[in-house]
Length: 197
Image 1: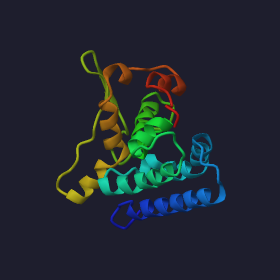
Image 2: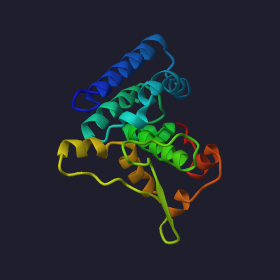
Image 3: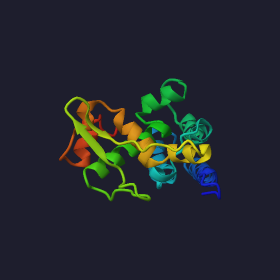
């Protein structure tokens, strides 16, 4: 984190590490079949991009594009039956985009907090992530209000798990938000499973 509270330096470091690992994989292994390449990506490169992403998850388009470009470059080297653009390759490989993957992880982490499966986050007088239940709207997270007195601080808070993660969770259909008392694997199955990621 920089002195201004941004994660720009960390995002740059993560991108460099992921690029270096991706280059090493492509230099070391000749096999370009989807099964081998997806396994290498999942085992060696993806963990670098995923580590602690609920904390530093970027929401700025430029940072998202930088992270997405690493997977875009890697998938371009995979031998597929037909030529396709990035989104076509992800579809045929049954992989998520990096942005969707991080957003999905944030939603699952919020659900785990609400289910008391992981510790709730807390800052200041805020009691952490809280939810409301109503017959009409179902279970929703209380989104903290942003102080507009400091635009810089408001932008930092917008990227936080308590704000951005709660927004993502509230955007889910009511039937999914109301799921409770099941394991994480059952929750993932109800959301469509891992989808090959």
